[in-house]
Length: 289
Image (cartoon, rainbow, N blue to C red; front, side, top):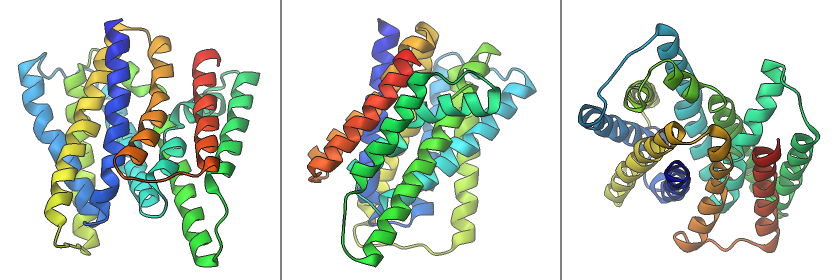
């Protein structure tokens, strides 16, 4: 029960963090906003590790998995997520980006040779139909192109997160790596990559209200990169992955509701239906797939 509560709390934290990232991106350039988030996670994970189990670096293979997969998850996935937020509304991004569990199952079939069940195919179909309803119909070629790019980025983000979350976290901990050590490697790698991106970009934008963006970057860095992952990893230690996996899909619901409550977005009936279909597909594949 405690493991399930921790897992559900992690999903809630991830959903709220994703929603709060949108106003920050309106006031600060992407690279610097992401760098603040990653550096915040790194700053907090060090005292967390020292105060708990400490840092235990196990095998080189586990360290390599943590580094390589976090490049896919916390850098490329986050990059696509933020690009999507800049083009479409948060309630449209949330279902597509958080369809990660479905992509994880499809990746297991494609790359690991695991069997692909009828349930997964039905879930994939629900995801496609849901994306169609989310897209809606807007006039104007420029608007259409921008929205299509936003949806493509959100789907790409979901694919990155799904592939990255399929095996690595459980594998690293099974090799003796503590959650704090896993987080330290993740945050150090992510911070270095975003620092490089910020230096190479050299197109920093600082609006009058950028101070608020810096605060939001710090808050979402703590919640999304540190608190959410810490709750999830400790939940994995207390409960089977098969029990926690369906709870990961609840991030869609939390993100969707948060965008309506906090960002005052007004989703259409089509968008609500699309989000519900994608959520249903994710929960279906996690519960029965």
